Amino acid sequence: MLEQKIYSLEEAGRKTNLSAEILHSFCEHNLIPGIQPGTAKPRFDEYDLQWIKVLNSLKHCRMNNAEIAKYATLFAQGSKTIPERKAMLAAKAQELEAEIYDLQSSLDFISYRQQYYDRILEQDIDGAAEVLLESDMCMF
Image (cartoon, rainbow, N blue to C red):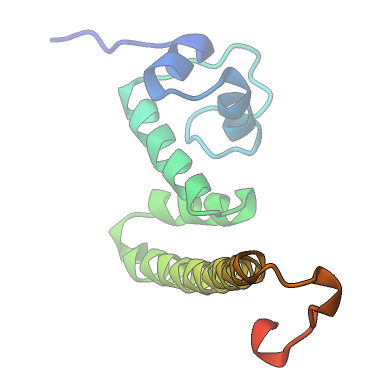
């Protein structure tokens, strides 16, 4: 039988490309099953490392610790919670899509303004004559 490799906080950080501070935060927020918050020197196995990668992905999806904790709790309850986890991810996807829309609108505004300024500079128009608030130039 193969012996299960156990990793220190620092080793786990290197294996997952995360800082010890982030891993410590995951532990303190009780996001890693089997590791009690406040554990001075937590130890991680391969399963923990895979779970940490999932946690990191959820963080990159802009889930907060409370959302991740709920997801982790549901995950620990097994496949019967798949519909609820799927719904959580769908809600987060909608939030991200709305954020992407807002960011794209902001980029569009900046691009429009830059093109506007380019036209002014190309035509050597006096900046004092520029109309600052044209209705078609305002995005919000």
